[in-house]
Amino acid sequence: MDIQIISRDGEPEYAVLPWAQYQALLTAAGRQPPATPSAQPSHTATEQDLRPLAHLRSLREAKGLAIETLARTVGISPSYLGLIESGERQPDAAIRRSLAWELGIAGWRDET
View (cartoon, rainbow, N blue to C red):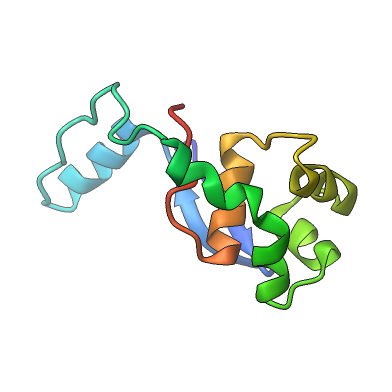
């Protein structure tokens, strides 16, 4: 099996595996595999969804997080997070999801 393990704080948190292998595991466990997801995204990002990114610094500060702490938790450098906070850089979808997770914000998704 081709499995990717995602850890948080040094402990395994998620296991990611190819869709076909996931369906095979469900079948072997006697469970009905879910339908294959469509290629179309279920959500299209709107300007309102992305608006919290413009307030990233204030969201981080409201949580009492130092820029270094949030950056390291998300897996980026503090200087890159500073560029994101200042609007000089736009993070990719993975970084958006990580920031949203750490800050407890819903809706930071891209169309990809």
